[in-house]
Amino acid sequence: MTPDDVRAIALALPEVTEGDHHGRRAFRLGTRILATQWTDTALNVLVDESTARAVEGGACSLLWWGTTLSGVRIDLATATPGLVADLLEEAWDRRAPAQLRRPEPPGGS
Image (cartoon, rainbow, N blue to C red):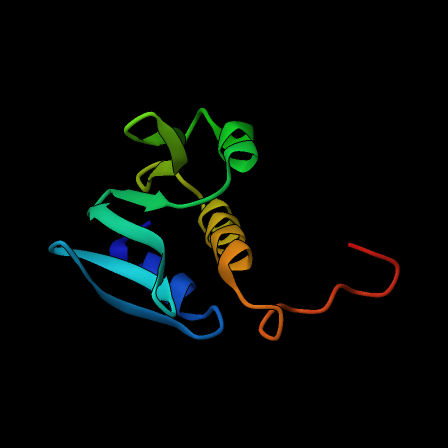
């Protein structure tokens, strides 16, 4: 996965914008950061602790902000597009206001 691949996936999510965050490419929903392109081969995605722990290993390592688990760092050299898309959507979903969220299909997910 390249930074351009990540950009295409992130910007396909409703109302996500791209901007700078301390010299790095970041993807936001409103003012809330969903992910930061840390390097060309590393993407930090802000997901909840249960999601982070569930995907830890392989292409994902835990992302710590001090003593707080804040998400995952994805190794883009080994990640699949599906993994990146799923985690970006998870980050989007936890920050999206109710009017933007997609309705659940009838009968649940």
